[in-house]
Length: 276
Image (cartoon, rainbow, N blue to C red; front, side, top):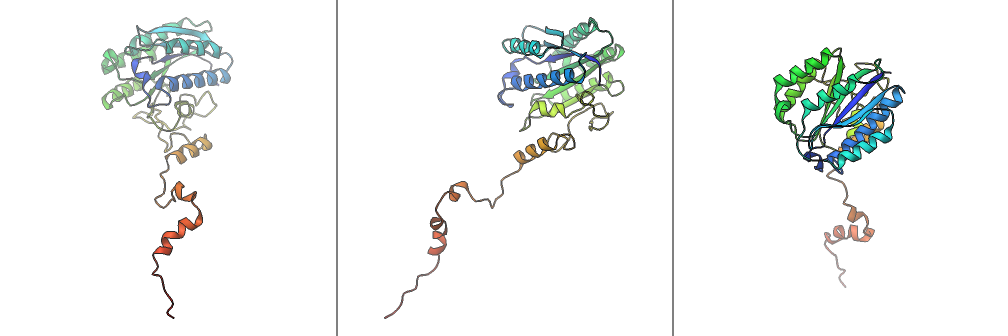
């Protein structure tokens, strides 16, 4: 299991109020953060996690190098009270990198996980600047995962993020996971993605990755989950997406007495009268 110090950068912009994820993007993100924290701590008791925001009045560190889920939950609550503005990904990543640099246990590998649920703004939309930042992370041995969710990322912006991950990745240690809105939970898709594969003891390469150089990590399974890793969740998502059959009897007819159901058939026959 990996020995890591992780900083999670969450999106607290105005876009996180959207309801394309139930009950909102922010709540779906909070659930995913809790899942990641619990998985990290369970995989190795020496692991630490931190949480920071990147919108509102500017990037702000809420929790640093903690092993307590309660502190993370408290930080998420604080973030939920301060939503607004636009995300500043480059500044947030630089601050997260600085926080990791001051970790107490220098044996912990460094990782940043960034949640992106809104359109890219300013320098974050500039591919040249983002690639420059990615190379800096790679030079400093900092792995990074980008989790993109919602419908706010356009095709051009997605190419910027792919280029960023390709230049930041070293030995496939960085990933881009894109989660479109749907019946699945954001946390369920993440736990079945390359982001948490090593923490769950899954050998590298078992979970398929997408992207030109294999550094993508976009979930390409039909129902958003690898059926080999979580068959129950895959089946559940499959049933949710299955269309209703055209020959299905409407529920209202099922509740009617049998005589009423066959009455239309009886009326189609011509009545016969006996002659006397």
